[in-house]
Amino acid sequence: QVQLQESGPGLVKPSQTLSLTCTVSGDSIRSYSHYWAWIRQPAGKGLEWIGRIFATESTDYNPSLRSRVTLALDTSKNQFSLQLRSVTAADTGIYYCVRDSGLAVPRWFDRWGQGTLVTVSS
Amino acid sequence: DIVMTQSPDSLAVSLGERATLNCKSSQSILNRSNNKNCLAWYQQKPGQPPTLLIYWASIPESGVPDRFSGSGSGTDFTLTISSLQAEDVAVYYCQQYYTTPTFGQGTKVEIK
Image 1 (tube, one colour):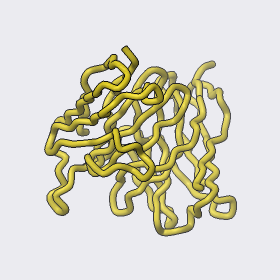
Image 2 (cartoon, one colour):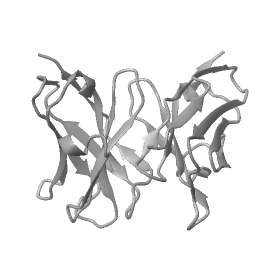
Image 3 (cartoon, one colour):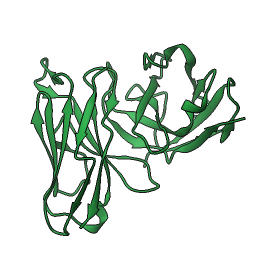
Image 4 (cartoon, helix red, strand yellow):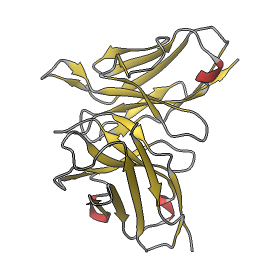
């Protein structure tokens, strides 16, 4: 059974960097069968795709966030991570790590972590 | 970006009755290479992450009850719950993957 679990600080100060890690169990992020992605959900709002990463470290980013986002892999721990720079209150929300069923292009997301709430506030 | 617009924003349906949820894309999301529509539906129960219900507009994810079905093509899509159960109370989202993935704003389904 594939499981994903987000971890990281729940509070980040404005202008600083939001850093989250996703630990995957039941699947290997080194396999060439899936991409691994981040999606966020501002409080009371809809869902926004942030970006995704593959075992080769190939990445795709949402153009609206590309200048501030970096995704990375830690294959030794079967983890992938998100860094979002220069955060503001608009970046407050629940962050989900997910498994992307697509290869050449993003598709649907068939496994989700429970999500972690990140608040941007001084 | 392709804008996804769902309607209605909320819907109250009696137990056992049909629920019809709509999703409209700002441009066609039909993939001409495989003649499939790049649309997925998710269910999000309170305090939980979304779960995948349907992809390619009409293919149910494994384990999804058969009362859930998806239809539509081009720009207009529908999720139908044929006989609403209490456990179906949730917010439902559509998502396009024709280009950079985007989601609708959600439809909240409640019991009347």
